[in-house]
Every structure is written in C-alpha cells, then in structure tokens.
Length: 169
Image 1 (cartoon, rainbow, N blue to C red):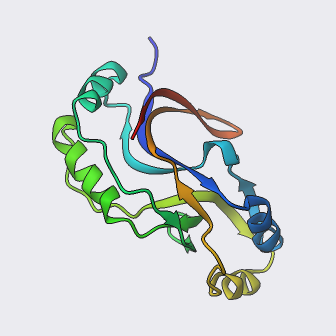
Image 2 (image 1 turned 60 degrees about the horizontal axis):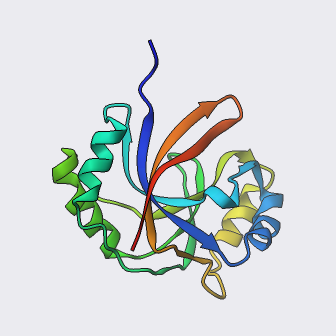
C-alpha cells in the first residue's frame, strides 16, 4: 500500500543575490541552504489528508490572485530553527482565506516567509544575531506571479519538491 503524497500550495520566489546572503550569514550557521530553484512561500500545507486531483479541481475554480511583492527582510524563527526571508503581504493571507473553504482548511494566520536554511546549530550565535539585526540595504527578492501545488518528498538528505500543477496569475 502506497503512502498518500504530502501536498502543499506555494508561491515560488526568486532572490536577487542568494550567494551574497549565503556569504554574509554562512560563517555563523550550521545547516544546509535550500536549493535556490525550489525557494517558495507556503500558502497552505495540506499534508497527506488531501487527494492531488481533488485539490487541483478545487483550485481550478478558486480565485488564486495575490499581489506581487518583494521580500524585504530576514528573520530567524527560533522555535522551528529556520533562517528565513520575509514579506509583508496581506494578499497572501487573503489568498489562504479564499482557498480554505473549498479545501476544508481551518482558518489560520499566515506568516509569509521563505525558508533559506534549517539551522542545525551556530558557529557564532552572537555574530549571527548581530548580523540579523541589520536590515537589508535593498530588497532580497520577489514573489513570482504563479501558484504551484507541490508534492513534498522526504529523504535522509532532506525534503525535495515536485510540482504537480502550476497556475500563472
């Protein structure tokens, strides 16, 4: 018997200079940087409780619009141990709120972010937090004008993502 796929809905992102961010923060952190090609803002994690075809059908008839904005800051979510890029974009919450009823999702607050690294530890925690307090001089990247339904595949090397369906804005 096969395991149901782990699904999530996301907006892909592009960074202006990911290598520079890795250069600036890498010496302070232990962990593996996410592949740039798969960076995204998760709008809704569906887990294994959803059927891919039924999810696609629900999304086909939903309003999938949102505002294209830039990623403007970085942050560290200590509880989940992730280094992230963030955007202030209420339209992503509005998107979630529109998708929740047809997918039978509970109402939930969205904290739009892009996971850059799952932090395993620090080489220099004080230096990291000091660098984190400095604001980026320019925007870090932008949201792409599309939504993708992904399957998350877990392995000992970490998660990889396979796009199942893409919708352009």
